[in-house]
Amino acid sequence: MAIVESGREAYGWSRPVQCRKDRPGPDAMRGGGEIASEAEVRHGLSITLPRLWRYGFVLSRQRDWADDLVQQTCLRALERHGQFKPGSRIDHWLFAILNSLWLNEVRARRVRFGQGTVEAETSLEVDGARETEAKILAGQVMRLVGDLPEAQRAAVFLAYVEGLTYREVAAVLDVPVGTVMSRLAAARAKLADRMSDGAAK
Amino acid sequence: MTGENDDPPMPSDEELTAFIDGELEEEHCARLLDLIERDPAVAARVEHLSRASLPYGEAFQPLLDTAPTADLQRMLDSMSAPPFAASAVVPLTRRRLFGAIAASVTAGVLGDRILVRFLETGDGDDLADDDGGPDRERHWHGVVAQYMGLYTRETLSGSTPGRDVQSAQLAALNRPLNLSLTPEAVEVAGAEFRRAQILSYDDMPLAQITYLDPRNGPLALCILRRPGTVRGVEQEMRGGLSIAYWNGPDHAALLIGRLPPQELTAKAEAVRGRLAI
Image 1 (cartoon, each protein chain N blue to C red):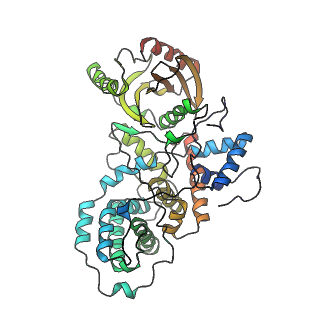
Image 2 (cartoon, rainbow over the protein chains, first blue to last red; image 1 turned 120 degrees about the horizontal axis):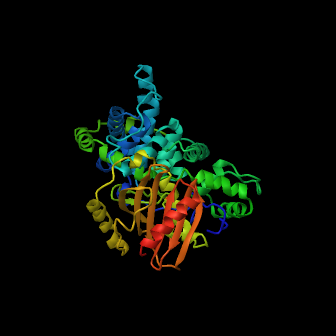
Image 3 (cartoon, rainbow over the protein chains, first blue to last red; image 1 turned 45 degrees about the horizontal axis):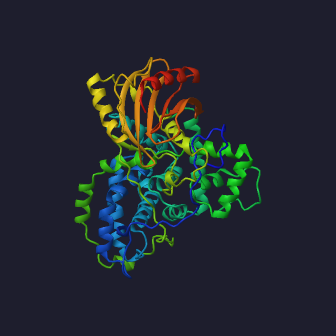
């Protein structure tokens, strides 16, 4: 890498090979035709269910809340199938619905009825995460992400796990791109500090 | 994007994060690269922030398997869209969905074959596309260091497998790497064998043999199949970990751990004497 002089530590970063570029997505995730049909949205939901559930779990940190969020997302998406813009990414549209339901309904309801606060929830760990080295490492990365404040956690998940661009993350979270940048930068600084001071160890 | 000021002394974390994530426009990106080359403080900050470039995709993959997909599908199948609902509701938001830009969801498989692509930025660039500078040859050291940085004593708390199991695990490495590793050859003085497994770096098979040194914690011997110039043991530090590395005609090898460089180099010299790479 041109930037790192020999003798200077090159730990941990590689030059982005390309700056911004458009990435074609899988055709299965795109709607076709002029007006989205209910069948199309239903199909989109069907192939996105596990990823929706995972996002619901990352937000709520509880399995039953994730179940609930996915169920409500299905209902809402089917109700509003006419609003899906054919040719755009249906998975992102569904993430946006789920995110909105979480912020406006599910989380609010949970706090209102005193069913625990966000901070008190279980950490992000898969059942039996200690079985193998690989699972332990996965568990450690998930724990690091799980310890982030909710807004940063959602941005990190969408950008780094789901691989969305900043603009796509902003669209899903319904916030300006600048807000996504601040959240990712704050998260990155926090995670890097933890990696450096050995908190992940 | 931010940072339109000319040549700021220290770019913001937002700007550097966008740079690491490959989100900056080309011109902006080039300006930062230039600044990083000239200013060690900026380079250090980029390096620091890059420590958070973890294998997120792989780490969250198992969560997909725990999703109650069949139940959710049954729930979906039982739903019918309420009539008239579509025209009765207001738009959820007025956001635009960016259909032209799509994400690449890497479904890394955790298990015996782990993809080591820690340094990939969010947009799925492959390390193979790197620009081939002088550090290219040792780039994998950084990737391994970051991976090993996650290891704790607990990660390797299991017991030492018997010689037959060690031989079987090593045999699985020998074929793809064209090696003839034996439990004796890969012994590391003062450390207990834990596990041998295949990882993948840049689409090349990477052998990783882990050990627990009761005094210093996790250690790993890593071997990459890559022809190069034969070189003796040299050492460097990455992310607080010592690395002793050497090259054979067909492979590059390194020993990595959290112990004094001289001590690690001595162990590496011993392994190098026994190991035909």
